Length: 105
Image (tube, rainbow, N blue to C red; front, side, top):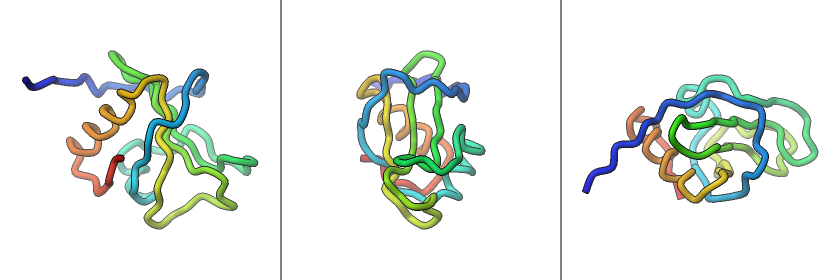
């Protein structure tokens, strides 16, 4: 059985109710190519860079660095948060459809 996901999303600033679901190993440049500019860039005490996405028919998903002194530019295990375990399913499908090098786990 093939499931067709609607990968339409909007960027949002609210990540309430999300928690760590897994990781995406890729570069900052590949994430910008895939998702555009981050939703948040700053000098946080735990997060310096974050994308927050709300999929039309799915979860809220966050992709962020964690406890880094500065935003990682090279290959890095970015944290994937979400309000459901389906966050990884949506990110994996988005990566595959856009031919971006990344390992989602």
